[in-house]
Length: 379
Ligand code: UDP
Image (cartoon, rainbow, N blue to C red):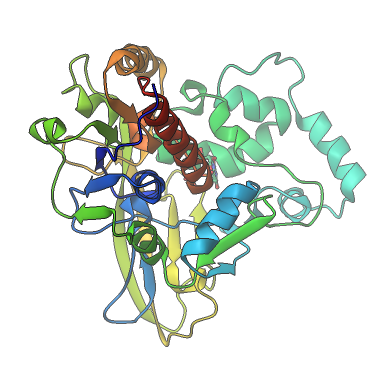
């Protein structure tokens, strides 16, 4: 049966997931209401100008857009001017500053050498622990591919602080996000498109939501009672919260930000990591350096400290330890049979997602919902 009547869709969350799905459904002629518990759109990508300095602040920590997905890249460009931004990260360890991700300069500085690419490759091969087969955790992954000295300098302390756990307790996949390079290339990401929106992420998300078929309700959580008003729901809140935590709570790390204000520059770069365990914070971000096309006489930075999220804290990083994964399995099974709702995004699927992946998955989810409406099948 083919049916073309407009449906009413309730979407929980005005981050990238919720906004992109809302837009796709509205453009297809459906009526969408987006419920956002916070008083702003854009979720954890939210940006706003600091009143004192005029600097564009990434309120929930730095976000750099990077992608190899052409569909996603052209999608974001429809909704805001994206300015090329090559993200570079430095790290302070034992009283010295190095470049990340680990590259030829980092290796030569740490070992006090002047090695070329092949020599450095040979050095790291000697450093690496070849007795490790398939790495079972972050530490084994590091020891197998870079050896103990690089691991202990740049990863051991930082990772302990970031995750609150020994690296031997953390999945190997966390380290796989970072490359090891045998050139002097120090760009943090490898993707062909790397940019920051000129007017901030919130303006991009607001533009995505700006459609006559979309109503946005800020400071309004999506409740069980709201569900009855809609033909279909899209949930980008925490997966376990939808089910009232019936099997227990999925674990998250949250972040605390401590403000630093100064004249001129404080760090002189966008992000400085701190690898030593004795330094309590993981990194400092100087936000004016995320918009190098702007000039500001004063600066505002944020020191980041990570800790286990308690009730009421903003969830950032899904922890995904063994106990979380078994809990996640039960919620995923429940989600699969839950009628008339689609679970999306970092919180709705309990995965650490980059923005481009979030947008790509939202476009795919919207296609799936529209296909089901079109063919009268279950979503
Ligand atoms: N990491 C580290 N030292 C660093 C930077 C990263 O040990 O100086 C580890 C840490 O465990 C982190 C992971 O590598 O969680 C991934 O780093 P990424 O920069 O992708 O983390 P994000 O910026 O997403 O927090």
